[in-house]
Image (cartoon, rainbow, N blue to C red):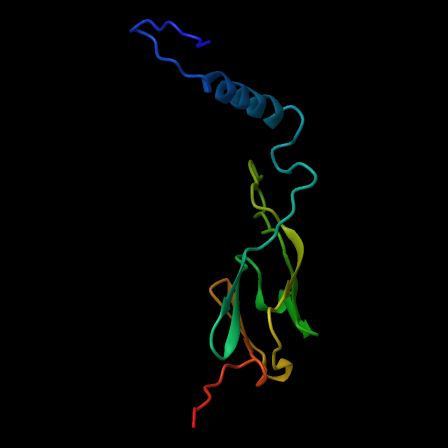
Amino acid sequence: MNILRYQTPATTFAPFARIHSLADEMTRFFDVPFFPRTTRPAGDRWVPSFDLFEGQDAFAIQAELPGVKKDQIQVNLQEGVLTVAGERRPETVAAGHEALRQERIFGTFHRQIALPGPVNESAVKAAFENGILTITVPKAEVAKPRSISID
């Protein structure tokens, strides 16, 4: 059995319009009365984005850490697990100014990435430039591909 819906030419059928309208109403309802303008609801945590790349001789990890200073980052590598931890602190508001809206999340972060193969832990290098942390982890000699000649 097919259900036929009648549409007048002047109106269009938009089944999700009411859902979007309800979402907008909920956003307006919860935005002002329950949460002050300068804070965020509990549970919001800043988790920086990480990318992991594999080359022939090394793994490369890049992390986006905008607003974090170099001395606020700790990088550790132990048993093939790379740990990056740190803290992004809020900006201070100038005297005589009041924050009307603060949407950026601040606080501590702690990320661990298990590297997909054996690495040379003594030769790890890290660089931090323009808010991007780049960590280069050389592969162990055992893990590097080698060509074998055929006699």
